[in-house]
Length: 157
Image (cartoon, rainbow, N blue to C red; front, top):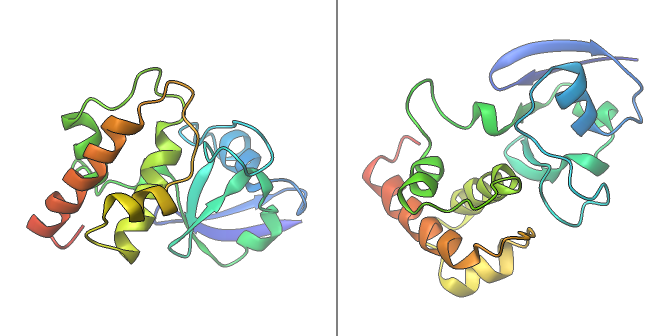
């Protein structure tokens, strides 16, 4: 099945099994390796991407549903050399330990900040439900608050 969509601002078309998880189309078909495989059951969030601005767990999202959609992966979160406020905050707060799950957390955080630009700790706890084996949650919470402040300074992000 041929599927056409925009990914990270570029129109793409790929011939694939429509039932295949979008994660594998992104990683293996388009060679974008930033989106990670974690559990394969939409539980951990390592594979989080945006589809039409909404966060989606790509390991359980059939590729056929991407037809005609705008998809953003961690590679497309920044604008050229300008990091997204979430990416900058992650660097500033030295969030990652092993780093494997972090692209999913950053994508989930970017989606949260679109919905709740100034999240409380409770908002973060209720909305950022990805799993980190290294338990860098404290640093992530600090980074989420910092990203919200950075986004206020540069509202075009």
